[in-house]
Amino acid sequence: MKFIGRNILTGLITILPVILTGYLLYWFVVSAESALGGLLRFLLPGNFYWPGMGVIAGFAVVFSIGLLMHAYVVQRLFSAGESLLYRMPFIKSVYGAIRDFFHYFSPTSKKDFQQVVSVSLGETGMHVIGFVTQADPEHLPESIREDDHVLVYLPMSYMIGGYAVLMPKTAVRPLNMSMEEAMRFTITAGVTGIKKTSPKKDQSQDI
Image (cartoon, rainbow, N blue to C red; front, top):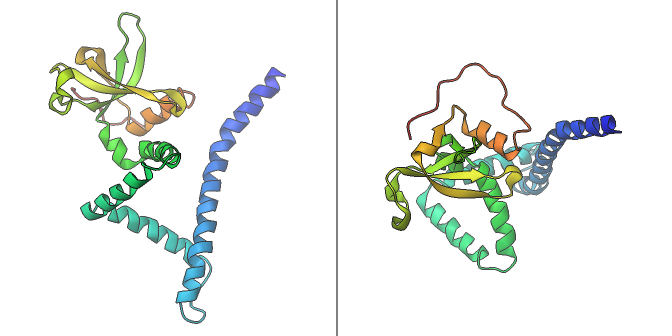
């Protein structure tokens, strides 16, 4: 039974990411074709519409939104709309959780992390993987500001939280890992391991 259960679990771990990714793509294609396809049929003359134009329009809309979000005015308008959502009971909790989850994987959030590091836990010999989020003391609250300390975010596995810890630089050692590798490794509690690839440029640096 253990042999059967272990192989079933291995199979699920293997196929679930593929199935979920495929389902999300399918949902986007169907939703875009259904919503925007009908609109295009109404707007375009004659038989100019052909199947698939709704999907293309969906990608164009998403790309345009991403492009507009770089504009200061759009950012301010979006922030104003978000502030209204955060004032609504229940909705603010649901929206906030979803927003934080996707923001964790967004390109902008990855830029917030300056360095992947290994943090030593005292004299125990144990180490945890973290991300330096603030190495400049002037950007820290004055009451906890220290020149020889950095702020490190220690994520917990499977997206159940994390800790922002101010610690001495002597307890932090830079790692030669990309942000994507480190996030994937920590989120899955190391189950995915680190794939062997061709030698990369050393990303470690003095903090």
